[in-house]
Length: 367
Image (cartoon, rainbow, N blue to C red; front, side, top):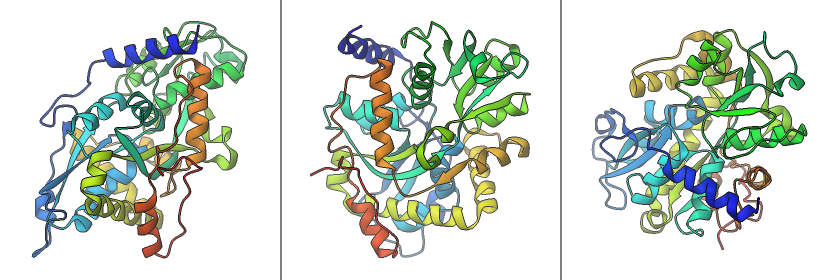
């Protein structure tokens, strides 16, 4: 199939997917928050804005956003400008919210960021920072899958067609020499696109034999009797690959650079605190999950999940390019021009002020 046809089909499927959560902001679930109570006395609005809308997922791989919201790191830097959270279940819906102006800044995986950037011909978003690496695993039913070669012929779940884990799994399958149609998921392995919320039920019922998923879903499957067959970090040089970026609407970045810088200061402060206080950070992330979804994670899920994620300000830009190549090889994307997808100047200003090393855009920065 020509790459252009595959791209059109892939984007059509993504566009047709229903938005998984509808709420006050139009696309993401408007999380309950008492951000106003965290505003310091005498604090001033930044750039004259009453609020900045921040999107993220209820995944531990979005731990910077979870902890930053819960511990007030963002609000501290934003002064009287309120940090308003919006929680999403999938990248396409968060990108749609960004495009519509329903959110201003978001934590998101690399594949949705790449898709959003290329679909708009580079006009709707910029990646302005990193957040996390790792936290993705292939978990299987040990009775059905005893080795990597046993994955052939099995039913393996990924979160969504064209999402970051879907692309990674399709690339891994191809490297084994197996054939899978990227759109239908049929072939030598059957790829079942399943929302992370329902994948544990599908695994428990035997509807799928395993899943290539982010945390905490991977550890939920282990708690259900699954076994980690492969940690995706083992496939990357140095064990590092981008799993979560920070993105911003381009017009918001142009009009409100001080707000963007304040959020980035909050992100850098959050990551520094997470790495210095891992147990307290894990607790804060779980509290935020409970606050956003009404349900905290049990220790047997939370503890191993948190250990597998590295929190970093570095966007690991070279791995984004590699992930884009994987999507092209899978037939989900035409070869993209990613030049300009990064604008790391605001982050590097924050890092310099902290006396921390600056980060690199791997030649994909905005001119």
